Image 1 (cartoon, rainbow, N blue to C red):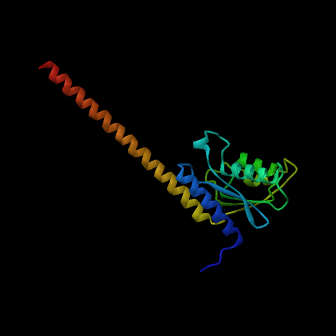
Image 2: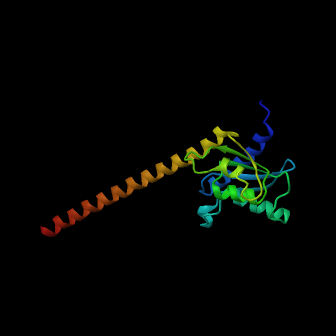
Image 3: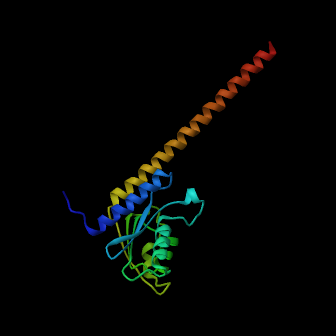
Length: 181
């Protein structure tokens, strides 16, 4: 059996958090904050449940870690593991909280993340190191399966509504014919 690298071990924990979100019907993205080789905070997407645009996995994990350390600045050495490349909002929060290193699994496919640019910009008097592609295939497949399933459900719902509409049209025509007789 292959021994997991340190980064893979913690990414597995982020994947576990993502799966928790999946069980709640959320987009399966998970995150963990690691300090001194221990997971100190976990988060997963909660946007649908909380109806908050900012309820991303990273934001949840960072907020919990800040509460744990009683500071908006995380201690030196904190790392963030995320199953998907962070968006600009989450990169900003990571920089603001002084996360030293970010590891992510799947790359954001639409190029909207700006991860590398924000990590190096020194906008908040802090730079962070970013490593992408940790357990990329496993992280990507979780998201791909979720969105494929969601598209299939939408297709089935559309078809169901179409059948209902056609059924109602037939009933209306039958009623019209019966009323004419």
